[in-house]
Length: 96
Image (cartoon, rainbow, N blue to C red; front, side):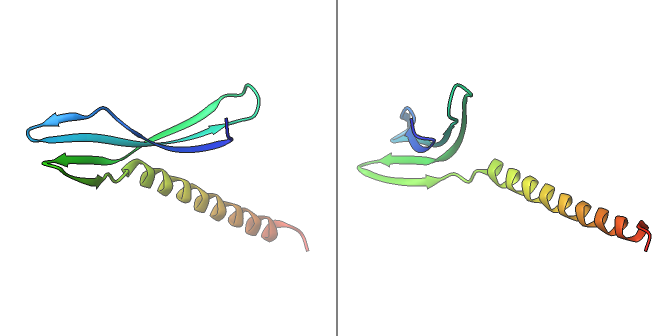
């Protein structure tokens, strides 16, 4: 198995009126070497709509990914501010 694998999967088709709806999802799989385990992140990708011989794709926006990104960048910014503040504090208290 490759170290990192990204794949798109189709779900089971559902009939609604004259339309057939097929959900799609993307999965990111990270396999660590050895028996340490696997990290899998599934997220919605979209919805394929089939109606009267026509087919179109509706993309689904993943709000979780945006939220996680904001939290990660916010934490990194906070740590950077705290690290620079600690350095300034140490410079002020050290004897000259």
